[in-house]
Each structure stands twice: as structure tokens, then as C-alpha cells.
Length: 164
Image 1: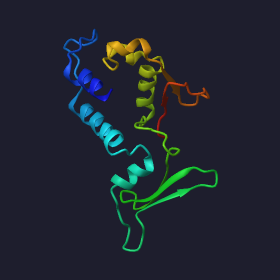
Image 2 (image 1 turned 90 degrees about the vertical axis):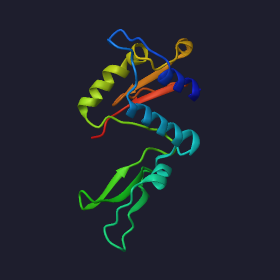
Image 3 (image 1 turned 90 degrees about the horizontal axis):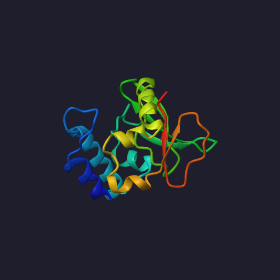
Image 4 (image 1 turned 180 degrees about the horizontal axis):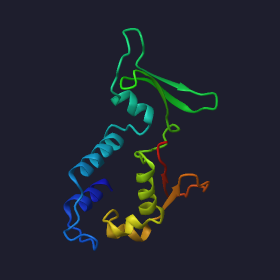
């Protein structure tokens, strides 16, 4: 499946009506997809805690302090506590539930609104070359927007949220 997607995305030409030249992914997009694929399929690091343990950049406030600690709140929320040198302070960040794969979020409201427009109606999957033609008839991505209390679908779900 991965090989087919890589061939379709990066080796085939795509004519998209809203583009005056054949559609091509940017180098940085390809690099991001290849990195994500490596982490999930080769390194088998799908959980956020495992990714942090393997790849987090470690900053020490002093010689005695731990730089990264994991904790769980009373209600079961996983968190990471770490020293952030830009703030010269410790910061706490929520981690997603164990093994919930979250690969990207919108960094602000403007980006979220754009993603909501593109993904909310699955429009992007029909206008850009994301899904190989032979898979389109079985494509059933359910998009759940921030604040919706919709039950996830049985096949594929995209939860669209943003960082506050």
C-alpha cells in the first residue's frame, strides 16, 4: 500500500484543473511523508510517548534536574513535563491517549479554518491527487471537526483540531 501511494504521489504526473502546470508535491512535503512512514512502518513508533523518548531534544535547566518526565493526571490524561529553554521554565503538555495516532494539528485558527474547508467535506480528496484512482470507490474517510461529538466510523477517521 505504501509503495503504491509513493508511486502515485511522487512518480506519476497529475493534471489538476486548478493548476496551470502538472501538480507536484513540494520537496518538504515528500520528506515529511517519508519521515512519517519511516517512524510508523520501520521504527514502529506510533505512540507519542515512544516518539518523545526516541527523538526529543533534551534541554537541562541545571545538572540535577531531569529534562523530560512523563506523568498521568488523576483522570488518566498523559502528560510530558519538560524544560523549555526559550521560556526558561518548565512546561507541561498533554499527550494523546496511548496508541492514538495523531500526526499533525493546526497551529492556529487561520490554518484550522483552511483545513476545515478542505477536509470537512472530503473535498481535498477529490480535487488533489491523494487517493489512487483504483481506491476511490472504496474511500470512506469520516472527518470529525473540533467540538463535534460524532462517534468515529468503523473504517477511517480524521479528527481535525487545532492547538490553543
